[in-house]
Length: 474
Length: 94
Picture (cartoon, rainbow over the protein chains, first blue to last red):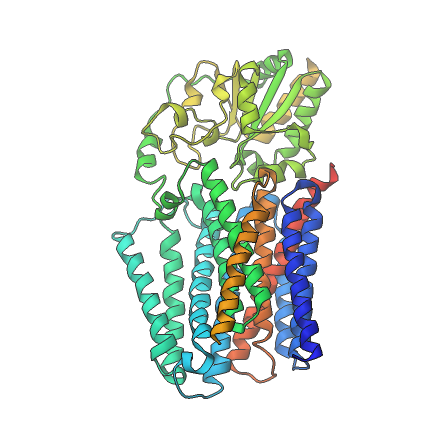
């Protein structure tokens, strides 16, 4: 090993260590921002090490790719509204998966097709590289198209309801086996220079289709779990790329992302009381919801802003349950104004954050942080539920499924068993909502019919502003 | 050859364990930024992409390589910036 390549190897090692440190720091609030920076430094080191390893080459293609990618990435990241974070993560994920798949393909062209060498891919680049090349193309392409479908569903470009193709499980198994068969023939049996390329692109196409057919049957409510799982895949794809080019640092970084994605997926499934298998098999919120959604509401009591203001004014403890509807109405600042106003009158105000509030875990925390809501006022679900009986008023703002008592009372409900914020246990509940339309799970909310619940129909932001104005007069 | 693959598998498996240990018990507040941050790390595939486009010729490998570089860079730059945007908001109050 020459001195130069030893230095490069040590730079890679340093980079891998910094990735671990960065990830560790990112899992604590106090150090999270620094952790992200450490991880970015690790990435910069890895790139610098690679460039040094490559020596002097022609940089035109490289520069083109980096400039275009940086521009798109930076503009996207700086302009995306916080409400659109789930679809942003899905898109970024798709880009990462596609990149890994393309690296595999490019490696094949460089070492097999353009090198014009005889034999199977395994004979030319070695069995290990041939196998992992297939794996990185396969997993990468599934990640890419699956993430695009997740993006389309999350951003409303595609309906959230599951799309259930007839015989979809058979179809998926066939696509899966087809891809594996193609991969094996590609790696060990087909002559690399002639049939290899055809097989590679056929594999690529099959995997893209598989990514689509795997994700379309999964309902919109489960999309965050899918994004997290695909995040894990993109890490594994990167790791496979590491095997292809024989780079341990890439293997380490990719494997850690794979593990991290899997853990986050697990946490989310737990919060939604869903097993990973049932999410992946899909169909949640399908036919059941279409029927349940139709059932009419009875005995719903509407209330005006004046009445709500009076009840709030007389309260001691108020809990606000924010949901995605709050973010859609851009009412985060309005809700903070109301909370501050109540706080100044000596009323205790807290925000009850369901683990999957917003549209992905932790999303609501981000949205409220953007509005400068103090971190101490954000209560987790467990704490809220333990204090809910001594709560005078619960104000539900644009949340729906996460306060639906059907999750506890109605065994045949599709959300039965999901942990909820027990708003119905409070003395008084006000639900601010545009209409009685159903939430993400597509089902009726039993909370709206309870005697201690009043609906305030209207846009969340407008209602909050009216409430503030009314309270100031009292 | 087999030796290198084995070392790779060792590294892969151990890194998965490290990943599990490091991420365990994350507060739910951090789930969203952590997901985008971990996502940025998967852009590490850029290291492979860089090695795929090293000449000026218009070849399939160079075009694929450049495309892979662009996509990986979107992943890396976008992922880190967007995570920083979120985490900055958490940081200000502490």
